[in-house]
Length: 326
Image 1 (cartoon, rainbow, N blue to C red):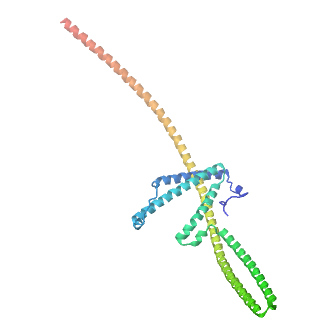
Image 2 (image 1 turned 180 degrees about the vertical axis):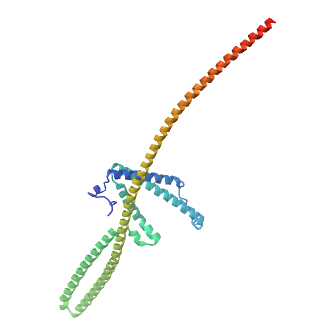
Image 3 (image 1 turned 90 degrees about the horizontal axis):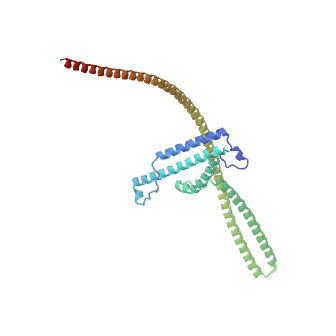
């Protein structure tokens, strides 16, 4: 059997995971929960109330399709909520306890839920055997107990009737000394009583045989259903184990890829830092050159202004002197 059976006794230790595996499963489950949440957010919003459709509306295909779409959307949202909760519980449990009993509890809960839905599925799909799909083991034991009880009751009844017939025969022997009329009367009454008893015994035997035949027909069917259920559960467990193995492989592959990406980004960051330092150095050099050039230009401007002022003053003095001399 797979590891998802309900743990009892020493089997609890068999479900313990290694710290490395638990950490990987926890991170993978958390990532899966985030993916489920993202998918749910991308879907249309959840319908708060399922629309009611009258008998007349059922005849309209468009409204019926809209109703089915609404039900499907609500079912998808509910399933995504359940998946997200399962992944979050699994992530938390494997992170803290190195176990995955939450999956076991979920499977047991699903079994109980499927038992409640089995009758509806059997009526809806016309397959009566599915209604007993999740209780066949108990049903088989119950039929076997019923068969044993019927056999014991039959034997007890046969013994009681044989004792009653023996007692009647003794009474017949005892009344042989009575007068012929009374003897004939009591003989006829006893014969009638015996015939009635034999008829009742035959009827009861026939009913018991019918019950035995019915139980005999149901036992092979219950055995087949039990085998089918066992095969189905084994297949489900195998699929879940395969999925866990795939999740671990994918987690390891994704981890290695991300590590390579982180290494590449770290190398790129180092290169960018070197380029930035080089640019800062060159910027400082250029800025110092610009400052020197601006200082030289400012000095030349001031010098030119001073020369212009001197030239202007000299021109004024020369003009004044010429005017004065004339």
